[in-house]
Length: 476
Image 1 (cartoon, rainbow, N blue to C red):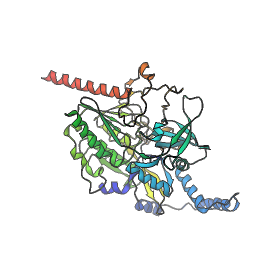
Image 2: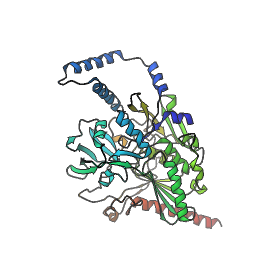
Image 3: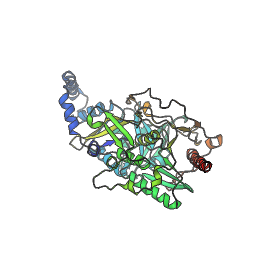
Image 4: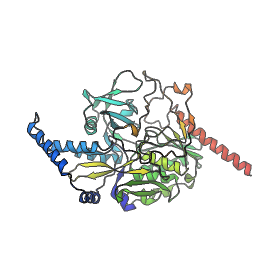
């Protein structure tokens, strides 16, 4: 299992974010090539079109451009997450695993020829400029996005730090497009943030799943325990607007709260190497043989402390693995709104010339066999987000955008699965909360003011502890 995990190098996240783990899969490629029969008629057609462009197009076009564009189109037609990466894009994708990369700080996809914002990454230029989940980017500076590939758009958004780019945005609830100036920066994302929100109650926010997220989570839990000077009575794990990241880090986070040998996730694809079962054991979350098991440093109470996991439409991929595993094992109450629904696995395949492809090779499933693809995680308790009224934006720009809305999205293999079949209870913010402006963004602020969902999570944890205390008293 350990060798297979290292070999496959699965990734679960997106395009501009660039969180990945590279791998080389010659065995898969060779097997497929050996068993496939070349489609000669289609290749002749391709060759004929190639020749016509070379001889008759209004301007000369290089062979490399034509081949690169053909590969780009071939992959883009599969699903929203498969793509071709030139040498620069491939290097930047690798750099993202270390938690530092250049750009604006947004997770994006393509929809109807426009750039769709899946989630802005916290503490980045995009988030500070007010870019929101569901925004459609229609222009980059003076250039329309329509007609660009996702790679072309991403390249334009990247650039030297401290250089500006103007994004023209279409947002639901705003009558006309508007422009936002964003200053590019080297994005340094802090994966794990934490705060003792009340005596005995800790809050941990994972912004994305990076290489050291598991170790950082252990440090956060130990720090909260030290601050509280006693074991915690409740933990809120915030995965809202976390677009995903590394698979082994997702397993580490789930293993933090689950007992050893608990199934976290399994994957299923066409090849034997794409079928895996990952449990809450060190061989499934440690990256190298030299790594020591950092989860051994955890206090024992972390496996049983009452938990609430917060999710929303910006929670994707690795976030859904963690929340799905904790939900299936009945280890935590999942609270918030429906997650994004990215249940596919991407594998990085270097092509030998500095370029590479990101190819969807499997779907992942929660321990109970649920496919999250194009469905997402349904919370145990639906708690709507407080809508912010500002600048004429009547709904705060929070749109109901999910994987199922993306063009060419991969289908769910078991769409009829409905879990328990019960409609979860729903909590809607009171009118006063809906009209309360959000606190200004502050990089040093971990817990935001007027966070209605977090307040509901803490109330639930305190209620659980009161109930447990009353039950204990009754037994005595």
